[in-house]
Each structure stands twice: as structure tokens, then as C-alpha cells.
Length: 127
Image (cartoon, rainbow, N blue to C red; front, side, top):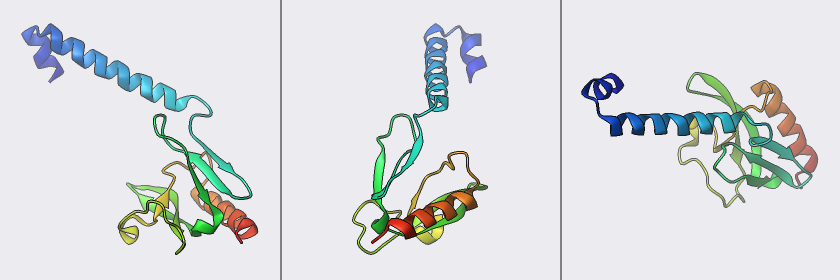
């Protein structure tokens, strides 16, 4: 498509493609900046932020039944199954996706180690 636009001499089309490419590169570069995506553990629960333009979320330990690992698009991720008292947004088909909530980022840890560590924090701090 790009070569067709250039061959026809469509200056506006080339400018539009360059703008979209520049925005994509900017968003990707911002996602590599330290601290924009994080996982913060507290005594009450955990807060995480996955993407640059999305707000952070806080989940209480009592809202999580257990943490698990699952395969999503050929890679292993960490997710959680919600307890009965959780009133937030859940995945509508947890058996299909492997979890009702997920990080889609392992924050530099192996998925099994991250799930085990989060489960230990949940056991220690949930009431």
C-alpha cells in the first residue's frame, strides 16, 4: 500500500502514513520508559498499570481467590480468579482465557515465580 501511494505521488497519503508511524514509534518508546508500567504490592492489595494511556487499577487481596498462570497467544502470563465478593470487571469467559483478571506483563519475572509470590502475599494479607 505504501509503495502504491508513493508511486501515484499522493503527498497527503504519504504524510498520513508518516504521521501514523511517528505516533506508533512514540507510543512504543513511551512504553519502554521505566515506571510507566508497574506492579505495586501493599498490605491492602496490589496496584498495577499495564499500558501508557490506561489508568492504574487497584485490587484488594480479599477480591482475589487465587493467582494462576495461563497461555495467551503462545506466551505464558499471570492472572487471577476473583472471589465471590469482587464487584469489579471480570473476563466474561474465564475458562477460555484462563483467568478473570490478568496483567499481560510479567514485570521481569518468570510467570510461575510471579504467580507464586503474589499468592504468598495474598495468603499473608487477606483477611
